[in-house]
Image (cartoon, rainbow, N blue to C red; front, top):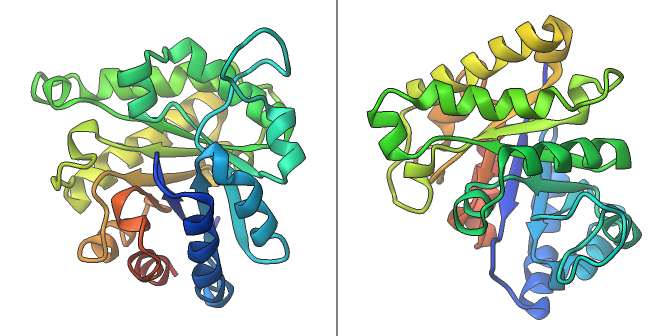
Length: 253
């Protein structure tokens, strides 16, 4: 089946509310013209209210960069699914390598967040990927397959492939200027799709969108998204300027 591509902007810890307003105002015309591509903006918590408000009535999917898997409670500094839904947020990044590497998120935590997002009606973009050391040691697939399995095992049986997105992000290519070759991206993402088929069946696997993330930019995006199993990109630095991100959206169409 044909999967609808997605181009997702991850602002990380960038932009004030005013900067977010200016960005959204400039992005809306591009997103409105992007037929056949889902455009998502994953903003910091402080900007989410405005991003969601300005996205209303447009094709842009407003997303958060993280959340916690309990609805409420004594979890100082955390944000829950009901809080995100209350703002009009529709999607959330889960298990980004920076959350795993810097803030110690485990596969178990990521899996619980993914299951909670799906059951809450949020679209999770679940990040998986390996470090340079793991890749050089031949451990790429052991790491990535383990991350994928931990998530799929906790998803409810009724969850279809359209309820979750994966993003393969080789950690060695994030913010470094190094990029996996299109063949590297296809190899990893194709193997993830095969694994999803083994775990949940071919229908599920064929529906799941799998993005590539890791120093994706206008100069290399066309070759990457042309790969048969790559369904778009999770974009960091190249998404911070509207003109750059718009070129990525156009390439995904």
